[in-house]
Image: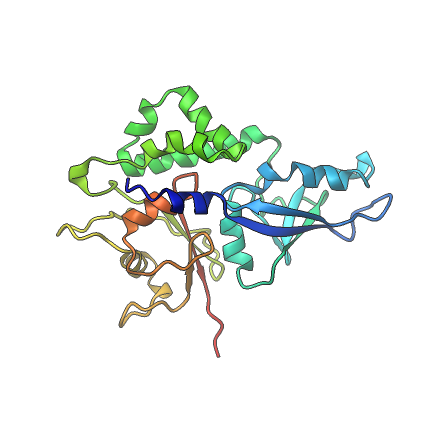
Amino acid sequence: MTDDKDVLRDVWFGRIPTCFTLYQDEITEREAEPYYLLLPRVSYLTLVTDEVKKHFQKVMRQEDISEIWFEYEGTPLKWHYPIGLLFDLLASSSALPWNITVHFKSFPEKDLLHCPSKDVIEAHFMSCVKEADALKHKSQVINEMQKKDHKQLWMGLQNDRFDQFWAINRKLMEYPAEENGFRYIPFRIYQTTTERPFIQKLFRPVASDGQLHTLGDLLKEVCPSAVAPEDGERKNQVMIHGIEPMLETPLQWLSEHLSYPDNFLHISIIPQPTD
């Protein structure tokens, strides 16, 4: 991969100032103060909120506590989506800090997966990494790794260790020089305006004539509602990691540098307010 390590670092160390507030109907023995945290964009809510959980449990009785879950303005937050994606999709136009409501009862079974332990997060994460490598390298790279390499990827994410993670992840970002890119680009496109969770299709980074496909090419083909049909200009905000990449950006470069740790490009399409 091209060595833009500063970009990789900036993506990894992206943080979202967040204020956690206990839901008003939760039963407490004394007033629950809000809890403030800088959330890492690349991680998962249930992986980085142990301190939040402890903070609010201090003012609650044990019998009033069941599985923790989070909500923003009435929308339950899917823990298996990366934090940065959740913010971009649901709150990118709101003022900071991001105000998240904490619940300990009435778990929304229809909306959220249960997350009883960190093992569940690890299994989900590794499943995504394996799926991404099936698209990029027919699973050859991930299958050639040892179990300890898989564990190092996970521990790097869990412990917020950039160098530990990228020592292994860089292997997943390589490709033969003669091929100009991955076999297919692992991506998912999310929209709040549809019931469909996300769009995911096979898309090559290089066209049949050898030209590099761009972000605009991808959107025009798989999510044309995101761009104007005549000139390909953006109609909506197209966000990855809180930024709006130029539509001319090669998809291969984006995949190498702006993928989340699960090796997917998570792209949010945010409707622009109409005048």
